[in-house]
Amino acid sequence: MSQDHIDRLLRPDIAALEAYTPILPVDVLARRLGLPASKIVKLDANENPYGCSLRVQEALASFDRYHLYPDPNQGALREALAHYTGAPPDRILPGAGSDELIDLLIMAFVSPGDEVIICPPTFGMYKTRTEVFGGRVVSVPRAAGFAIDPEAIAAAVTPRTKLIFLASPNNPTGNPVSRQHIVRLLGLGPIVVVDEAYFEFYGQTVVPLVSEFDHLVVLRTFSKWAGLAGLRLGYGIFPAGIIKHLWKIKQPYNVNVAAQVAALATLEDRAAVEATLRRIKTERGRLYRQLRKLLLLQPYDSEANFLLCKVRLGEAKALKEALEAQGIFIRHYSSPDLRDYVRISVGRPEDTDALLAALLTYTARALPASADPAR
Ligand SMILES: *Cc1c(COP(=O)(O)O)cnc(C)c1O
Image 1 (cartoon, helix red, strand yellow):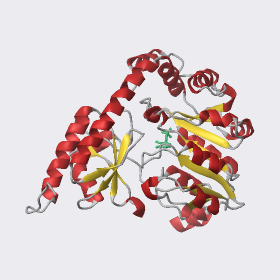
Image 2 (cartoon, helix red, strand yellow):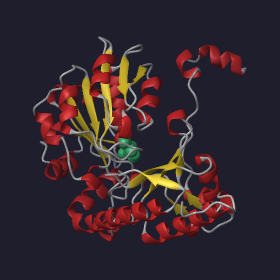
Image 3 (cartoon, rainbow, N blue to C red):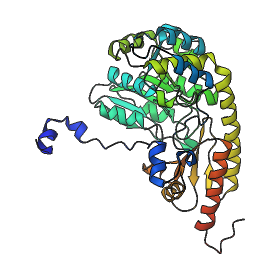
Image 4 (spheres, rainbow, N blue to C red):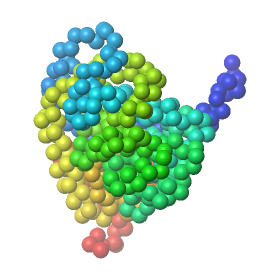
């Protein structure tokens, strides 16, 4: 069969989609550079560099029922998450990463041609997944300082608007959405999805509001704070009228057994993971202050575990590639609104040191010899 034949059978909207560029795993990156994996400084995916605790590793190692299907009702996990979040267990739905919950929401609410509002620059999955399901993305750019613009969002709402996605703190800008803005958007009608992937670094949540509004959803994940990105576990807190429909469409075994074991152990061993959160937050402050001393980058305030930085010397993409050649990975985006920016995840102190040394060398090379670095 020819490609033409396949393309005629394919959904036209899928044929027109651009390919997604995923982040490469450390061993692949290391092999490509001829470095040992331990020499790679990975600051490109907002992972917790300390990993999960010893108790979590032990729980995974000693569990002896990996040959049995997971609990499709996720009972124990939902109970533990209820205790952690303060929301009732029957309002909590775990998923294979919060990415899966984004999918379930779009599947449940967005028919082809329906609209989803996003506020770029923001997490790329909202747009990608909306388009995969045939929805129309309506972009309402952020105002100065990356705050959302509620009045512009209100003006963009049409009878076909089903969902409004907001990350708080936002990826990649690091700033939260104010509670006042969220309440304003709840007055508009579409379902408001507040993605709190970085809640544990910020400390403020709108989870208590979910019981007051029947069209507010909060998403969370174990990927960023809990060191479990590789196991894929997220969850959502939903109003009763929404969660009952998601139960009908989720795959019965969407959350794997290892993820459930690791999440339960994490929630029983919170002191250990919280110690790593404190280290990351302290390091975020140091990284911010050190970057501000360089001419090269202008970091923005962040309530998450990464810093968005404007590149003030040369091209952001060139900087990303120069660091990559030394085994230091940061994130650069191809979208026009972020062309001059990079996002740097907060790592361990030694990761910061390696990054700063490489940035100093890069600055010295990028600056014309005659320029006065003090200016
Ligand atoms: C990383 C991230 C996610 C994805 O989390 P997973 O649980 O790993 O799927 C969702 N939302 C935002 C804003 C993120 O930055």
